[in-house]
Image (cartoon, rainbow, N blue to C red; front, side, top):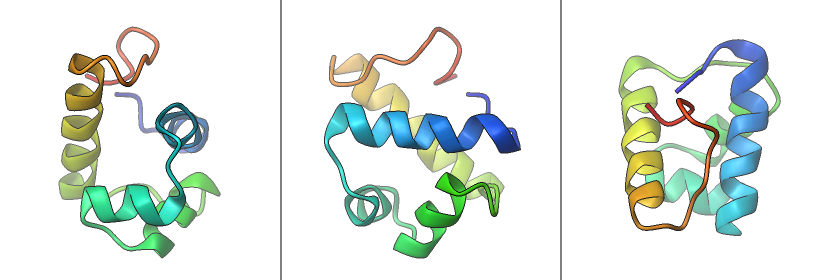
Length: 76
């Protein structure tokens, strides 16, 4: 998954859009705070290594269940 500054924000927004999740919902599923997801979406911070791993695992799970369709390589 590409989590460099500019591309993380639209990626998180796209994940939430496809799954019909609020920032609060996504934060709860990832085990992070609402403020963390908000900062990612607004490009104010990048995920820690742990949070990045959680986001990648979540994306892989949702993709394998057919609930999420990200461009190739975005969830790896």
